[in-house]
Amino acid sequence: MARRRSRNKGRRLDGILLLDKPIGLTSNAALQEVKRLYRAQKAGHTGSLDPQASGLLPICFGEATKLSAYLLDADKAYEGTCKLGVITRTADAEGEVVETRPVEGIDEARVQDVLARFIGEIQQVPPMHSAVKVNGQPLYKLAHQGLEIEREPRTVTIHELEMTRLEGDELDIRLRCSKGTYVRALAEEIGEALGCGAHLSALRRTRAGPFHIDEAVSLTELETLAESGLAALDARLLPMETALADWPAVRLSDNSAWYLTQGQPVLVPQAPTSGWVRLYQGETRFLGVGQVLDDGRIAPRRLVGLGGRG
Image (cartoon, rainbow, N blue to C red; front, side, top):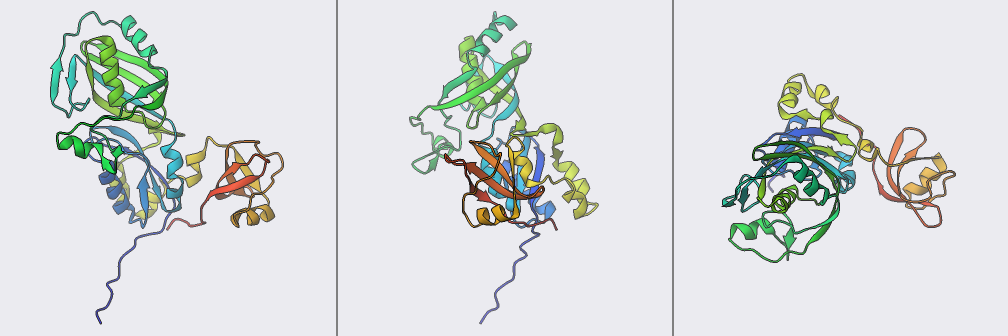
């Protein structure tokens, strides 16, 4: 009988790396490169960035992957450039130019008036060149076949939207928005509202949930750190619970923690009366995510193992 080939499963480590993804790399390619540098057994990213976009891409290792859905659901912030007067098939710089229009009479006052219309809840139709699936098929695959199908509009929320520069046919914007917002589609809609059309020529993600781009590390920096050894890389990992830094913390007694880890809701004095919470045993041992029930007890929703770096 042939011997089963053993696989090198990689290191078991838990934590979150804040990566500054470069332009020209897919999110998955960036993830695989980081996973290779860390020799990690398990890793995943929290929300794709287009290859031509740069910026914050949180990467979760080990048990932290259990919390990735909460980062996916978190608000994001971006800085982008709208190229006025040029409409492309994909609403970004990669697409074929389908129409050009003159850019005349567009001043800061007019731009500010238009941007104000998009703040709050808006309806967006997912672009054909997107990963949204219809009947199990990603839209971009249909688009590559030259097909265009009807898409259902989605409700997204633009919390903040401001102009940071208007120079010639370029408009720089800064925004904070809910999950599922297509900034490409927003740039196109802003162009239509201005009357000249537009596409998104540059995009950089600056925030994801509680994380900021200022805390991120580039692939080049990681490669340099790797030359000093795995300990230097591991020093850049954040504890997994930092993904939930905006949530209230609930600390349990050893007895309550035991019941909760058995799947049972527990009553905790002076705990929040509603919503989602971070759960700890004592002061420091992070247990995972809980939700306050209608009767005030806290139910476990997503628990993590102890794990550890190394």
